[in-house]
Amino acid sequence: LAEWVVAPGPASRELASALAKALKVELVDVEGRVFPDGESKVRLRGEVRDRNVILVQSTYPPVDRHLVQLLFLAHRISEEGGMVHAAVPYLAYARQDKEFLKGEVVSLAVVAHLLRSVGVKRLVTVDIHSVEGLGYFSFPAFSTSATPLLARHFEERRLKDPVAISPDLGGSNRVEAFARLMGIEHLALSKTRDRFTGEVSVRETSLPVDGRDVVLVDDIISTGGSMCRAAELLKRSGARNIYAACTHPLLVGDALERLKAAGIREVVGTNTIPSPVSRIDVSSLLRDYFESM
Ligand code: R5P
Image: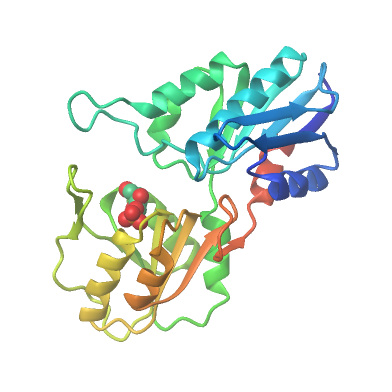
């Protein structure tokens, strides 16, 4: 199985093509269509027998469609005798990694099981919500991090006495890594989320940010609620410019407008998910991962 190829899932054609170019390997032909009733159909046209196949498919919205396409393609590649290495830059359901309320499905565990059942032999993702989630995979699973790329982006800005802040305690390690790379201070807010309504609130009432620039750092911006609550507190505490950095800009609905309205000057994300703010390219992270294997 010496030879490597890249197979582009319908959700990640550009990223797959950049990765194939960076690794100097063939990009095999894959077709994808969606029928009027919402069913997906995928067709593998390239040759994969006895090859290591990096199947690139991010599972951003429509989440279930992209997940099903990933499963279908992995199944087909395995049937054809290819070894499937799934590169899933944004891994959906990673936040559903515990039974928070009694009776809830640990959806990430089911996703891990499904991937295995269709023959996936390895998974690489970018900034999984929590690294503990990798424990659900019974085959090699790895999360690479875009934090150094995000930090480099902000290093090039002339920020005034900057501080990096995580909107919640769960992001403490992430914001610490970001701040260490930039050589700046950091802290994490105590965010709470109502498990029934999804409503977010922040416990702190003021922060030592008067006249300073702040970079809010999170793995995901979905509705923007977490970032908006943090930005409101920062404004009240006298922050100068507020920036928001994330790996996965889901930006559901009017999230971007709400972030701007909350006083966030600039939102920066990566291309694990295509969006108007996906300015950081993660193909080099995936290249480095596969080159080091
Ligand atoms: C949750 O713990 C994640 O790290 C993000 O903070 C969260 O998913 C962001 O969601 P939203 O933008 O809807 O507040």
